[in-house]
Length: 365
Image (cartoon, rainbow, N blue to C red; front, side):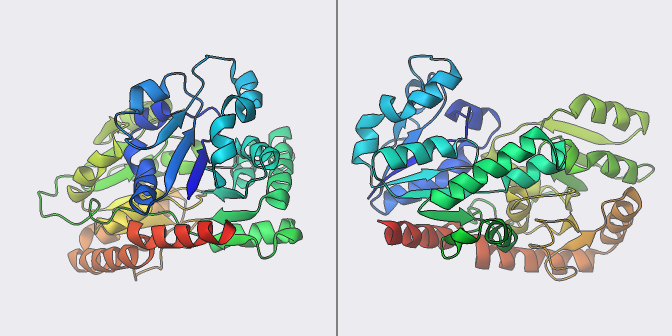
């Protein structure tokens, strides 16, 4: 079997590496290779093949080596990479942005198309820009076209599947749920000094609800580490300084280094207003951390309160109460940590997910 993956629009291997997610994203495709699947990547970088070919042995990297303007390169992809697209057995998109280019290629070369969505792009756009914004309307139109024509659709949660079936009835029978994965050998409990009281990992953007977290920490004597970067970084740092909080801002770090931070931490928190299927949350659970998550879409589908984690409100008072209660009870933390690890192993291990992926791909060829 030969699979060709279309990267998200404007995304390169260099982008994946810059934000520390290259190894995590490629892990699935290394498993593909171990199972006899030939893999090709179509990316938007200029130097991806030269920079990463040695790091990704056996994976064919096709990129914008001619340094064309992005809009022109996007239109030309089906022709520029025709040699591979003619030979491939199946085409897969990584996320909805950019998937219409993959769909065009699949139609041109008569290949089955798997539209994979780690999150619902239209819903994220709506939450960020408003229901009636031009961007939201365009995202909905793109999804309607993509999902109607694609051979199959892969989503990460039942909530996403329900959303698609409700909006686009002709997709009945085409939508399969395959959750995000975690390498449970790398993300595993390890005995070490717990010198971080509270850990957050993620983009520093409005949906992550980090100003509420900072307000919740006012006057609380704990050491917090925030891993990630984003548009709100400067404003968040200014607010933390104003509140005199004990926060270490770690910036972006490689995914392979996250287990070290997780194992040093007593609690993990994700106070987001909305999530798709958050990888950092399931990685924290796999590492055996007690986790606090907001009772929000995408989080409450993973956390069962007081069983494998703790659900909090999204307001500062509720977040503060959750942190204080778990910080004060080693017994509750130990109970949640044990169940979180077991839940991640049962549902999200890489070996478990690769079996689902390969079965889906084989059914489409």
